[in-house]
Image 1 (cartoon, one colour):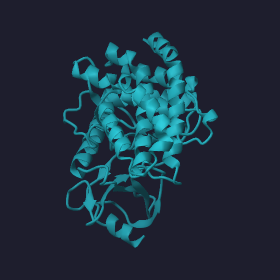
Image 2 (cartoon, helix red, strand yellow):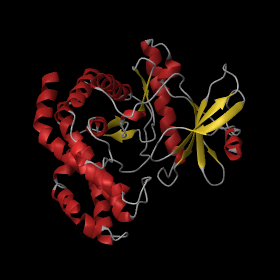
Image 3 (cartoon, helix red, strand yellow):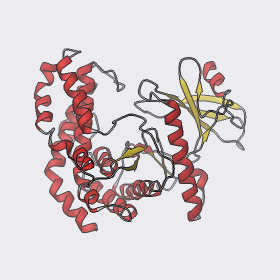
Length: 360
C-alpha cells in the first residue's frame, strides 16, 4: 500500500493518513477508503479512474465538479441542512487539477460521506425514496449553466450499441457465436423498436436532459435511518434521456433475481418496486417532464434492459474486455439473466403504463 500513500500525498487533504483499504464492488473503477488518524478530520475516497473507459479525464472531472457544485448551490438555496452529507466534494491535487496522474494511472479523491451506507437490494419503501431522489437529481440539473460533455460518447445510444454489437457478431473474436446465436437472433429481431428514442430525438420530440446514466441502487447513499442522502458515482452524468435513468433503475432494483443470476426462474420484474419508484420519481420530476417523456418511462425500462443484454453479450463475444468477470462464462450468464428480465418487462409493459398514467 506504500504506492497508494504516495498517490494520496499529491492531494490537498487535511489530516494524516492512517490506513488505506479497498472499498466497494464497482465493475469499472478501483476504489479505496483513506482513513485519517484524527477523528476531527475527514476520511476520503481514493479512486483509480479507468482510463480505458473514460478517455478524457479532464472532461470527466469538469463534469463531476460542475454537477456537484451546482447541486450544492441548489441545496443551499433550499435551506437544506447537512449539505456535507448530501453533496459530493472532490479534493484538488496540489497542482490545482482535480486528478493526479502517476505516469500510468489517473487518480482522484473525494471526501467520504460519514455515517452513510449503500444497499445492493431495495424494498418498496427505499424504492420510493430513491425515485424521489433521482427525479430531484434530474430536476436540480435542468438549469445547470455549464454544458456537460459526454464522458463515454454515445453511452446510452441504442443505435450505436447495435452497431458495435453487429461488429462483434461479425468478428466473433472469442469464437463464441455458435453458442450465442439464438440469443443474438432474439436481440436483433427487437432492434428496430429499441431505437425509437434516437428517432424521436432527431425529430425534435424527445429532449435530452442532464441524466445520471447509471441509476443502480448502490449508486445511492442512505443515512442511518434508510433515507437517501445523495446520488453518487457521477462519472456518466451527462446529456441523456430521462427514460434511460428511469429504466436503468427498474432494470437493476426491479429485478427479483440478481443481475447475473444463474437460476433464471429467480428473474422477473418486481411490480411493487416499479410502482414505488415510479410514484417517488413522478412526484419530484413531474414539474419538468414533457408528456412524451412520461409516456415512454415504461419503454425506458424495456430499453435499458435490452441495452444491457446487448452490452453483456457484446463483451462476451469480444472475449470479456470491458466488464470485470469472476469466471469465464460470467458475461454469458449475465446476458441470459438480463434477457429473462427483458421478457418479463415486455409482459408487464401495458400494466406499467397504466400505473404511470394514474400518477399524473
